[in-house]
Length: 275
Image (cartoon, rainbow, N blue to C red; front, side, top):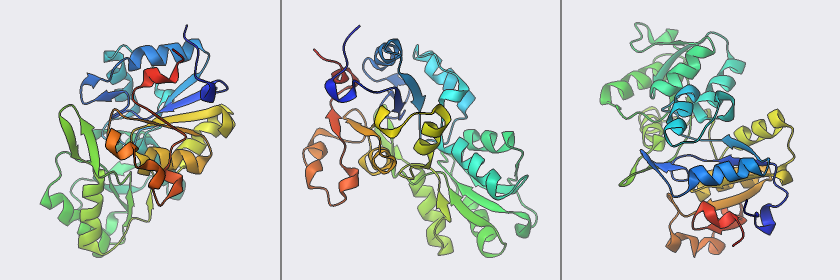
């Protein structure tokens, strides 16, 4: 069993982003599966905190299984799950219009909410929630606009990522859909639940009884993963396997927002172990 680098020797919990860190599309990145297994052998708890709201936690378990990474539903704190949990605190059994995919819909339904695709009366909708939607259309945007402007719906978003790492490059992220709703309504989301909001990380620490100095996050985005980790006071590690490139990493120290600067930058997850 390889020894961890000095900066991570006291870690008891490791939080991983998924897209761009563990995999890109349907392709595993490097030795991510082996690295996760080694961390578990060091008695380190593994948690996944993804902004991607297209899959439910159950679907993520199946996805990681295909990469030979065993997990359980409780290992996942996705923006879809966090959104559903937070919306439930605002109103029980709400009527919701969604621009988003099956994962977000499933998590909301599991918490007792009603997802309405074709509202007959725009006033009946309590919330419009926007996440990544690969089947985004003008008609969906028009309905969201009506629910917010003609009805009384509050506007929320799972996350605002501009891009999504895929096997052959970057694809548009949820932020594109969120911005479209902003522009046509003249309103910003009441709240964006995913990273860089540190709520998800704080929830993870509380649920597992871990102090910030004993936790770390691996991410490929400075403005979401790293910013959220720094806001939560945990160790932040930027991995150059997703959105963050080597050329961008070289300029990190010059960033105006110092909270976007990671504690460590690694080319791959293997570099967290001593040679």
